[in-house]
Amino acid sequence: MFRLVTMAQMIGVLVLAAGVPRMFASIERSGHLDNSVMVLGYVIMRVALVFQWLRAATDDPARRRVCLTYAATISIAQVGWVVQIVVPLTALAAIILGGILVLIEMTGPVLAERQAGGTSWHAHHIAERHSLFAIIALGEGVVGTVAALSAVVDRQGWTLDAVLVGIAGMGLTFGMWWVYYLVPSGEILQRHRDRAPVWGYVQMLIVTSIVATGAGLRVAADFIEGRATITAATAVLAVAVPVGVFLGLMYALSYYLVRRFYVFQTWSLIATAGVMAVTLVAALSGVDVARCLVVLMLAPTVTVVGSEVRVLPS
View 1 (cartoon, helix red, strand yellow):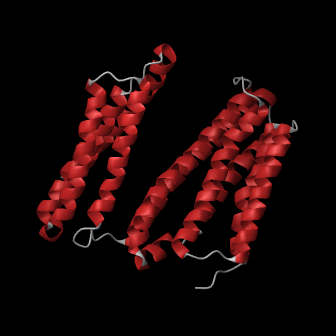
View 2 (view 1 turned 135 degrees about the horizontal axis):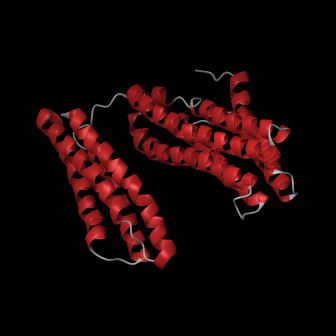
View 3 (view 1 turned 90 degrees about the vertical axis):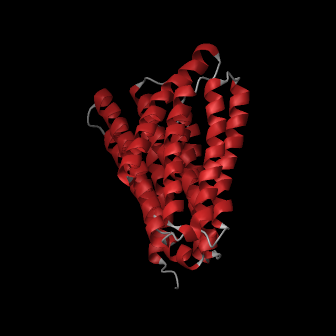
């Protein structure tokens, strides 16, 4: 049953993904937000999750109230999402309603976990699941690197720029992967389970920044290939901004979990900010995109090297 319901959720993902181009096309065509197909896919996913929580409530009487709280808050939010499908809304109204519904969905776990001791989740397992999701997201960085590299090779052949783009893209992806695993999430969550909600929500932002980095590399590829009308500085920013967000979130999450900021981390953060600044100055000064990306690659590298040469006390 669990696998069948999971398949239903995967179908919801497909419907949601199919609705994304339609949503953007509606805004471009008429200025009216048509997100009905995308929302329908999300509702399919969440209704399947409600069914899972109801199963859990039946199988675990001791935590029945917790499971029903999850099911109730998710169901309330889905009613609101269905309203977005059947009732014509302006773009602004849809965004406002969507924000309220997201808030309801995010509040549900906080309310549920405060009842009857919460769910009996395994800290290391949950941390591992999120880390694997981050690895999947990092695959977008590899795809973006391939696109950028192909653009350079198709336009110029195997030149120094092609090599630099390949090194920069893979170096960024590899460095972000390394930085992600520097935070001892499983160990800390096992001792301090109350820190899980903030940790979990920050994970959503971290994965978003990882995917955005891969998308930024695709933008850089379009610029190098001559298909984008943006400036070189904008192309570099498309990669630098999500990388900066990712690194900032990782430092903030590390401090939140460990509740201590080591001196070497302060210097690493300052050096990372310096690398980001040099990247932006280089881009604004007319340095080509490939070389700017190589400089940007050093941002996560600074954190990795600083952490590996300085072993934290247990």
